[in-house]
Image 1 (spheres, each protein chain N blue to C red):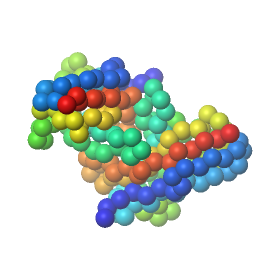
Image 2 (spheres, chains in turn purple, brown):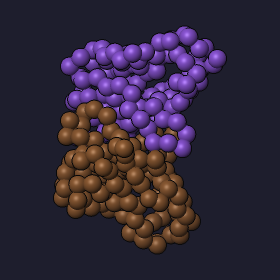
Image 3 (cartoon, each protein chain N blue to C red):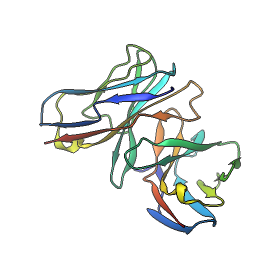
Length: 109
Length: 113
């Protein structure tokens, strides 16, 4: 059974607007949550992470929010740029890493 | 340049013919792992290793073997490949502070006929 879920396979956003990508998880014992970005024909690259003891982490245009009671995290990209168009994976970890199925973000110029 | 390398990048083989996909990292990372990516299923961890001579099963270990004799290398072995192992495979590594970024290799596209 999928322990990390991304229920939106795709998302389209206008350039300059906010992109919000969502992720749900089932295991309350996860220690850390991470977001990765993937372009076609390349391996995923790390974007941002958040510890389970925090509820927000910010890095430039990227902010991750964690709602432990809802077992939900989200990635906010503000402002969105065409170069942000990629597949975004959320992941959760203890010793193992569990990835979601990915959300394909398209930023329209 | 810090990197994870995988070889081969593309491989077409036949059912039952043993193969090895190599993975090497130059960052002195303790933690290494293998993933497969399939449509609609995302990335699933096959095996991981927290250090030399220490390996553990991930979510989908059936049909795969790994070894970690040296810190930098973590080969993935398919002793008797089957068509359901046709997939895109990624190797990754991270430091002992492994809650932070994993560095991924470029991927190996495997087709088993």
